[in-house]
Image (cartoon, rainbow, N blue to C red; front, side, top):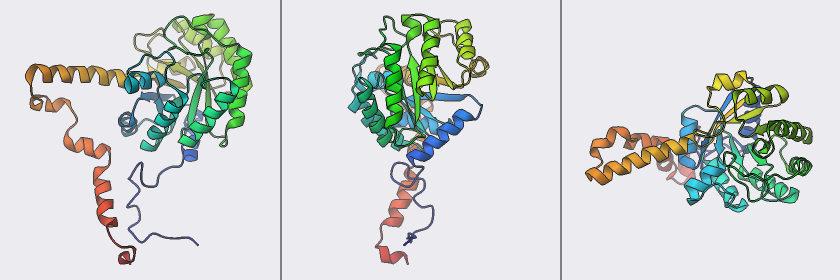
Length: 318
């Protein structure tokens, strides 16, 4: 029979990561609604729970667990395919638990062939992600804005996408197919692969690293009718435009995969240089989060209130 808890309604609602919140299915539905809204989805990348909370606090509709950012920030490694399936799944689960907004996870190549991709889908689905991204590089993969990419045959990638779709237990899970064919074979091949991957069942297409505005426009025209990702890499191969300009070219998802990490990198370097030079931090207090801001981001007041309220025997609530 239905059970109504005896404590005050809403007491636990703000305890992200511990209390009630949107289910993984709810987040997937929310992500699909954002993709179908007609407005550009701005997708900041995150490397940790702090970043995920900041993205949510800033009012963005979703966050992106960046593979390159995990390699760099989590392991001190370059983005050349050194992080494993298990490490990514563990990381994605923590990030999904830390935020109420949908999380899309970079799943590299799926960590193998079609069977490996199917298992990756099942593991990431269980971890709570709302969407995941596969790419068509050979293993070990490399950052899309590096050089010297090698790709699997397009037909093999189609099989991988179709198999990944079959592995879902929740058909709201979004599958993004990325191609790095622009680097390896040119923009025409990238567009042909995009069409093939949509035919295989990809929900979203990600043509990595177009080199010019004309190439962006060509991708937008030729692959119109399915949500498209553009990856904004500061200093990378794709022209840096504004979100409305990308939207005008046909891109419904504007990914800033490592903007937050690189901004934190810069701020952290500056902060440590100050400490080394001056031997104190008080004079720099205005350039860091204060104590209250830090605790509020992680809901300490709500956790403290719940902890105090729940420190009672069950019968004493009545």
